[in-house]
Length: 186
Image 1: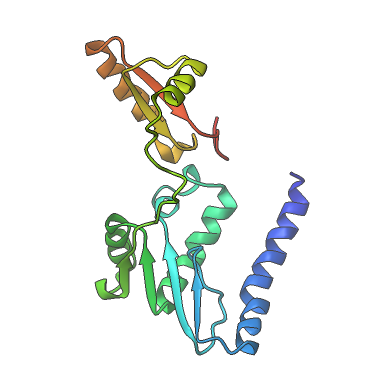
Image 2: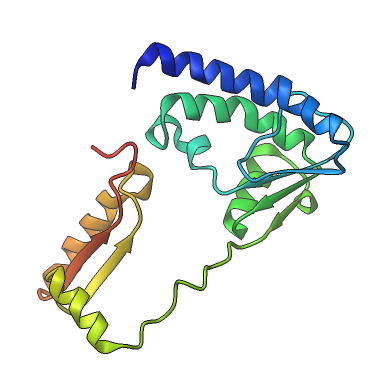
């Protein structure tokens, strides 16, 4: 929350991630390094490198999509990481297509592996349990459910606008938004 401390923290994080951590990997004599968070260190040694890219919203939309520092950092680091990665995992065919188009990498370098779903997410068969939740939040059927945070990238403005249009035809319809405000909610 204190700007100068946040700035110093970012510098320390950047230096550790890019100039100290790689030597840790070298000392451990690893064969493969997988970064599930988009980027590789600037210094890389002779091991296989894999990155996972969840989406490119920050690349396309910039600071509208994420915090300014985060967006600048990723825009600088991602092209370097894509170039040096031996393999890139995309979480959807759409993201794979964007990676190939934006970074001009061979399609065979990118593989789409869809995210798994925890066993805690399942269809609830107990109608009473469902009714309790609907009553608690004053939700009446029929309804449209949005689940996610309310950052601008989720495009809730468009959802609400579309809902208004549908509601004209189907007056009893409700829009239910479930999730946190997100970092960039206004």
